[in-house]
Each structure stands twice: as structure tokens, then as C-alpha cells.
Image 1 (cartoon, helix red, strand yellow):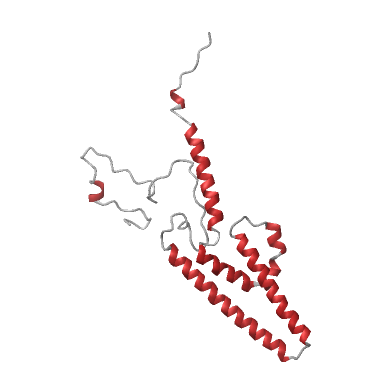
Image 2 (cartoon, rainbow, N blue to C red; image 1 turned 135 degrees about the vertical axis):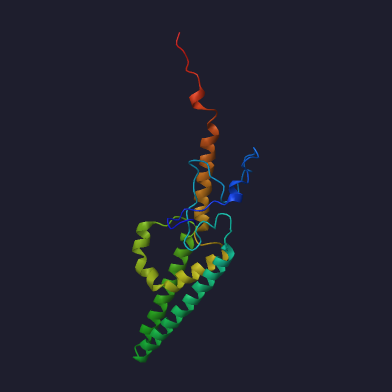
Length: 194
């Protein structure tokens, strides 16, 4: 950087690279992330923890997936330990065996339902009202959410399939729209009446 304002410096070698040669700089490849995108081209949506690295699986994508899977499993193990300690506290009061059974079944069912809803939510757009109504259920079944996240990280980035479908649809639509345009509309002659 050349000054405190953050203006980048241009090197003499970089500026003189094509100066005086009469040649234009080499065009960048279409897959080059630094290549300029056409005006109006759709941009991929960033994904939590992955940014836009899910598009080309670059920028440490695989390492992030494995790290997040391991982190989710560690969090699930810690949560299971906390639940175990809470269960031991409950049994210390020596309640009826029916109460113990109901607590275990409630946490198991909430975890199973939360796992299923989280897993399907990665592949399809979740319904906002259904998510709001199930918030308490998923809070109780947090182990299912963490396990679904860890399992999905082993397959792909959580939510990648949904975003990839949206992005590819938007790109195809953009290509269809731009392919219909031919020539320079300003250069067209106006038809004369008569």
C-alpha cells in the first residue's frame, strides 16, 4: 500500500509490462476468479463458513468441511455429556421410573426430528413459519442438529446443493437472456414509413 488511505501501489515492472509493446494484456481464463464478470451476471451467494469457495471447491474447501464436521462432532459430544450430567441430576432425586423414561424418550424424539428437519433443510428451502414453530423442538433436540451438520459436512458443505441449484438456474437464465441479444441496438437503422 502506498499510503494510509489504502491506495495500492503500482510497480514500475507491472506498469511497463505491456507499455510500449503495442500488445494488450493476455485475456484471463473464464474460470479465473479474478477475471471480470459480464455486467448483470449472477453472483453466487456466500455460504456460512465457506464464503463462495463452494462454487469451485477451492480456497481450503475440503479442509473447512472436515474441520466443521469435527467441530460439530465435538460439540455434539460435549452436549451429550451435559445431557448425561443433567440426567444423573434428575435420577439423584429418585423420581418414578416413568419420569426417567419420558425424559429419555423426549430427548431422543426431539433429536431424531431435529436431525431429519435439518438434513432436509440443506437440500430444499426451509419454510420460515415451520422453522419458527419448531424452534423449541430443535433447541431440545440440538444433538440431532449437530449430528446432521457433521454428517452433511462429510458429503458436501451444508446448504451447498440448494445454493448450487439456485446459482446454476440463475446462470442459465442469464445466458439465455444474453444469447438472445445480437448486435448493437444503437446501430440499428430506423425503418422509414412510406
